[in-house]
Structures are given as C-alpha cells and as structure tokens.
Image (tube, rainbow over all chains, first blue to last red; front, side, top):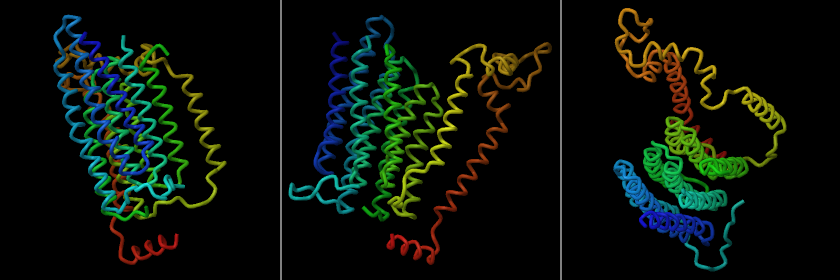
Length: 116
Length: 88
Length: 203
C-alpha cells in the first residue's frame, strides 16, 4: 500500500516538474515564465522526494530490515534546501530583471522571441 | 519493479530538455539564467532518482552539493549581471 | 534497453550533445555561457553514473559554478556578440574528425570495464597492495615497505607516496591558470578602458 502511494507521489511529482518546464517554454514573456519555475518545480521536487523517502521506508519494512535513516535524512535535507532556494532564486532573478528594466508583457504588439 | 522511478526520471529528463530549449531561445539573459536554474533543480531530482534506481551510494551527497552550487551559482550570476552592463 | 540506468545515460548524453551543439551554434555569447553551464551539469551526472564521484564534484563546482562566472567576467571585457562571419572552418573540422577517429580507434584496445587482467591491475598495483593493505606493521620478513608502516589505507598511501609528483605539478598547472586569470581579469588602466569602450561602441 505504502509503496503504491510512493509510486503515485513520484509520478505526480514528475508530472509537476514536467509541466513546470512546459510552462517555462510556452509562457509568453519573462515574468510569466517565473511562475511555473518557482511553483511547479518546488511542488514537484517535494512530491518526488517524499515519494522516494516513502519508497525506502516501504521497501525496508517489506524486507524486514532496519530503515536507512541516513538516506531519508539526506532526502529531507535536499528537499528542504530546494524548498527554500528555488523560490529564493526565482525571486532574485525577477528582481534582477526588474532592476535591469525588463518590461512585463501586456499583450499588446510586442513581438515575442525577437532573438537572432 | 522500478518502473515508477523510471517513469519519473524520464518525465524529469523531458522537462530538463524543455528547459534547455528555453535556454537556447532566450531571448533575454534572465530567461537563460532561469532556464539554467530550473535545469539545475531537475538535475538534483534526477540524481536522487538515479541513485535509487541504480542502488548507488553517494548520489544523495552529490545531489546536496548540486543544490547548493546551483543556488550559489544563480545568485552569484545575478549579482554579476546586476552590477555590470550587458548589451541586452 | 532493459537496464534503466543505461537508458537514462543514453538520454543524458543525447541532451549533452544537443546542449554542446547549441552552445556552438548560438551567436549570443551570454547564451553560450549558460548552455555550457547546462552541459557541465549533464556531464557531472554522467560522471557520477560512471562512479567517478570526485570528477563529478569537480565538474559541478568548477564547470557549472566557477567557469560560468569567469566566462561572464571575460565577456564584460569583450562584448556579448560573436563576430559576424563564416561559422564553418574546414581545417578545424578535419582536425576534430581525425582526433576523434583516433580516440575511438584507441578504445578498441582498451580492456573491459573491471577486467582483472587489465594492465592497470596486473602491473604495479599488486605490489602496492602487497606492501600496504592491512599492513601497518609489516614486520621483519614483510615486503619492502615504501610507506614507512604508517598508512593503512591503500588509496591514501598511493596518493600520498606515488602520486606526490603528480599532485605537485597539478598544483603548478593550477597556479599557472590562476596567474593567467588574474592577468586577464585585472582592473584595466584608464587608457585601456577608454579604448575598450570605444571599440564596443563601434561594434
């Protein structure tokens, strides 16, 4: 049972991570691209790491061996770290862009992807 | 047995590829910084998954290192882009 | 493709090749620097997959972190667009193809991964191990011991005793690289700064 929950959480997390990237690719301008990067990725990594930790616990219980606490601690540490740093770096990027004068997209006549 | 982890890893790889396309397309330097940052997050998740799939030890330590390097690198890059003039 | 790690490896390498080609193709040098950062991250995962954890650490810290910042610092001195002109250099392509072909030809002679009969494991390694592993005190009739009976760990002993010169000249290489970086990135004199500003406005 626990293993199935872990699988479901992992795949859901993978889906969120993927949809976050899709948002980064498809959104019309820079500031809207920050949104999927900051939110979807944070949720995605949280779900994947929770799933992995649950899976490790479930496998240990099934095999009747002691749970590998160190691995779970590391997973929790990475997850917490990303939970703090991903939104922070997204905020830092948007702040830098604002300070450098990147204009938000208002839906009027600016041509998108004007590079090259 | 490991199919769920494999599916997740493939989803994350696909997401990483999309972030790569955004890094190629730009158009502003901040888009690229964002794409690299997202790519780094994906790498951390992928490393943890790979460590579990391949039953390797030490991958989680590398994942922690990457999470730190990614954050520090992004912030350093931004301090840099903020303070110097670039023609973008 | 029954092995999931192999499958992911192949995909990682394909994405790394795509990132490298994109970094060469783009004319925006800032974009190229970011793409090289992505390429480094991918390679670092690949190194970890090949059990080269130390290389992986280095690749992540240097390739994705320090090198990006260094290249950006260099870009502030030069400008961020590649010069217009032909992107195709036949001589360079020929050199790369010949070198690559030679390297791939060389892999044919390499021993299998983990082969106990590989030259690296039959030549001097048994000697080191005989001298060393678990023999803090080899005693009177023990083999000639280069480690002075001090180091129980084989890897540490080989690194410290036999790779000392290697490490010393690695340090020399890193010192040279550091001097070069300082020379390139040192603060410009006022006249040089004016010159740079003029050439960038002209470009």
